[in-house]
Amino acid sequence: MIYLEHFGLREPPFTLTPDTSFYFNTTGHREALEVLQVAIDGGEGFIKIIGEVGTGKTLLCRKLLDQLEAPYLTAYLPNPLLGPVEIYRAVASELGLDVSSRATANMLLSALNSHLIQLCAAGHRVVLCIDEVQAMAEKSLEALRLLSNLETEKSKLLQIVLFAQPELDVRLRQDCLRQLRQRIVFSYRLPPLNDEGIRDYVAHRMLVAGHQGGAPLSPAAMKLLRHGSCGIPRLVNILCHKALMAAYGQGGRRIEAKHLQVAIADTEDAVCPKRGWLLAGGALATLGLAVLAGFFLKGMAG
Image (cartoon, rainbow, N blue to C red; front, side, top):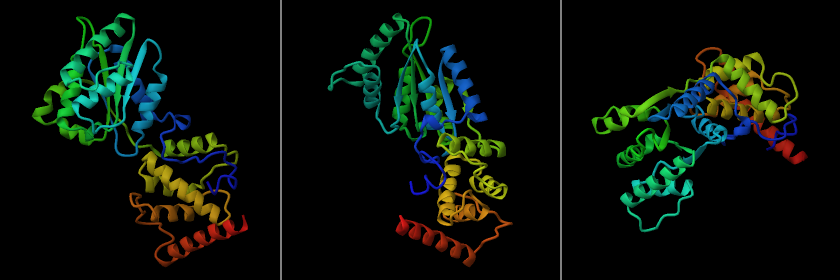
């Protein structure tokens, strides 16, 4: 990354890859993990975590998978576009169960049931986490419901955690999905970061990446970041990355408001302030050209 050495960083602080080494325990993620732990300990029904695009659902999912230890066994399905047979086959693979390539859905369910009974008898508890569930076809959601029917007289053999965008809640209101809806025992909706959360989130990621300086953003830049990102962590990452590039291009050592303005103007989902937009129109374009020229000159010098 072009600006790492300039800011004393070991690695990029604002990548979009869900990296648990950068996990920051925001209020929303902390509460979600508490709900998940209580629900999983209880051993009943589906658990649903809802969050807008970019609120960190996948990172939360990976954090949960990392922290679940014995007696728990975990399985993870990142692809929501699987049909019923593919879902059963993927779960079997995650649990180390070898099944025939010609096995039907009923055969796979039977094999999974027998395997889960064996795991239960050995003292294991199995948790299945599925990401992007809002994109699943209706028949695939029904397949999940059938998976949840696998149980002994006293407990479920498999707990299922659903991570999804709010569109899933809309879909679950349909009568055809009411059986699945009624099996969701615990649910939590991830909130956006508040002002304090954004400040601490940015500082945390910079620190993990190796930054040893003072506050990475000026107060004015932080105000613009709060407004432009609406508290969505993914947008915070995108805006901070672009603002660091802009600061580097001008030789700055921290992100100022003018750098955030460039980042916001270059990001479609960012919210532009209606007032206090100090650099607009031609002035903003001029700054953008200056930043690009800075990159070019630094590249030539290197």
